[in-house]
Length: 286
Length: 201
Image (cartoon, rainbow over all chains, first blue to last red; front, top):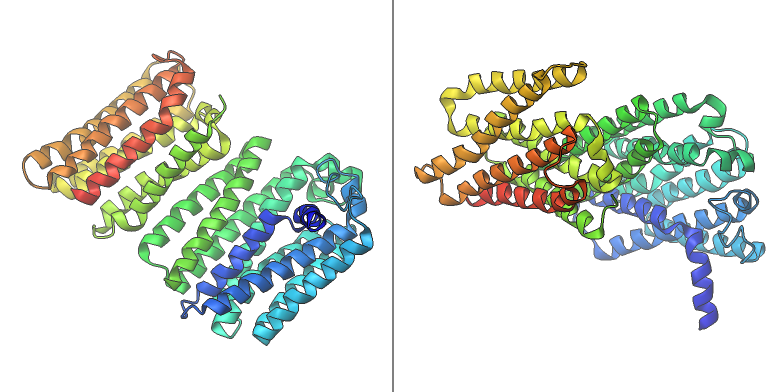
């Protein structure tokens, strides 16, 4: 029993629980945003399969990147990087969890499963294995992968890929650079030591901050547009408008005041903004 | 000064109350008050979130003076629009000009007392409106007595504004630490008064 508890303790950091939780929340919000009758078993199925697919891809990311994680101060204590877990074991756990997640998703509905698989494929194969060490533009593919949970949830509820689903996916796609680019500025030296190309090391901080600001604006536009199409009530639209105004204000401040504190403030606010937006979209179901 | 867990909780509840007011508290009003109240409670919500995220140091920013002008101006405009229809246009003009005056006097370096005068006039008129108008119309029976709570909120917003103004002026009547310690509770109490006043008034 204690061996199992110890394994769980070691594997928990490998799934990046906060990030996985946030992406899972987007998937559930995508499902609920359609306003279709809620099937409890389907909702549980979506939660479980998305959790497993996202966790599986994250574990495989940790497996492949153990060498660069070991060279970065921020990540060198991760169990895979610190050698607390055998590489082969991490790989197989990642594969089994991924297969359970994607396989389960395919069993629930082929279209839903296909979108979940696309997210896994973009994250593991395109982003992690192929592009992350080659170009700073790899984050676009990481972003597309992160946009798949919300698209999959929406596709499951509506049975198709509709405009709202695409807008919600775009919102996540444009929101993700706020995260990744903020990290790449804050831990610039770390990434340089590990030899990972980033926007700040390739194009400089000013361009990176401008990219963060522009992507925040685009994320806000996509969320706003999707909210109107979904038919969110006037009260909640007002709330989204207010939260969006805060996001735009911070994005503008990040560009004007080149301060790490403001930059990290935007990073935190953007997470809160996205979580709030997801809750508001999910309210459509109730 | 580091923000405690209690401070964060108080600010979060303040933000949730402001969000509630934006979503359901002003639904039955006409367009202009809805916009005015959305701006007022929206600034309160975003300011609360930024305080939680960035800490009390954010109050040192020069933008705070401008932002803290928006709340009383927008609230008082909403109240005047709803309850003093004869003064709608003059007050709208005052709100716009007052805001522009505060922005202009803060954005331009000035040695004279014009920035202080602009702040005092704008905050004074807006603050008195929020304080007195709900109490007077509640006393006249035009609205339910609970609406007077909005006036109490107006008194609290005035107190908060006073504390922040003295802090910005570098001559705090209370120490910086004391002001920061009471501010989250004051903001929550003020917002609760507004929300309860609108709900039950």
